[in-house]
Length: 448
Image 1 (cartoon, rainbow, N blue to C red):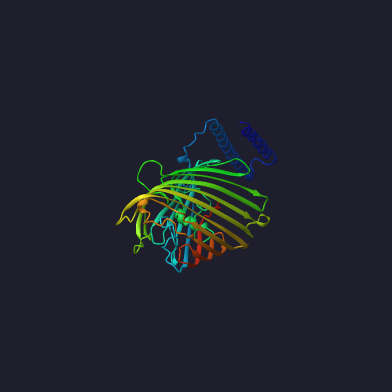
Image 2 (image 1 turned 90 degrees about the vertical axis):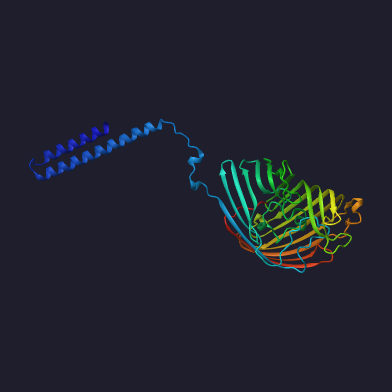
């Protein structure tokens, strides 16, 4: 080969020159000859090895590479889920029994508060991309009384524009409903969320969202679910138990202002929904238990506006938001299930709203003010129960809350909150709360 021949000729010339320059019997010449011969053999071996490797590489390049299945090609290091543990707790100072529901909303959910020191609800979240097409999220709620419940556990497609979510999730209706507790701006949810949604509407089902490919934020979505979330009834049967429609629109106004507005509609059915200790007209000591079965339909509107001077929200910002929900329920109500057990028609339209503002007046420090109001409505009661059921309470529950919180970083928050609660007729309540929220691990970006 050319390189080998050239090297041999060069060594031969060098060797001949050495012979002409020195005597043939000089012992140093023999040592030089041996060194040259060793170098010659070494370089010839290295050149031969390189030529063999080159030939093998050229042959391999002509063989098509077989694609490995994804399950075989991916190593364990490729699966690296984001894990977040949120630790939260409160101290509550209340003047009234927190188990008493808002006046006129005895048949609604009432999560209430806890007095004294309370661990609150801690959350463990795990999220990761499953493959290029799907993403999985699971959130486990660690109850203060012990035990674990599945708050969220869903799979979501990764495609842009049109997204499909299936499993257990918080519904996309309204503004606050999809937000987890550690994101709330106050210790508790507004009265309308506590009374109409048991704080949040969670569902087992499927959700589809479409984000329009426009500069203006336009989002529409629909859900079909089991109906397990309040006000629905989790029944063991085939079919669909609930449905949700929602739409949101928003935009930026320069670099300092942004807004979002939305509408939503929820429909489900309640079956044998029991309410206990109801103080109906006869004034039975300790109240009575009633049962309701019927249709429930709720419409809502939400609006959010944000302002950040020079677009820098890290230093200061203002956020104003409000939501309104109106629910119509109609069906059959059974009065005093334990004794009288009188069933007749029943329907009522109830509503509620809140308006709140949060102001970050300097880095790490925020203050907030919220006002809540409920309307229990005037019920239409069948003739058989007209003398048993209160149809008009003539009272509208309200509450005003003031909060101050300090966040040394995005992973920790300390909060003080005071509230004047007039949600129960004749039972005014001055409330005081201290809360801590600490996050350990991956902390993803919050929604708008």
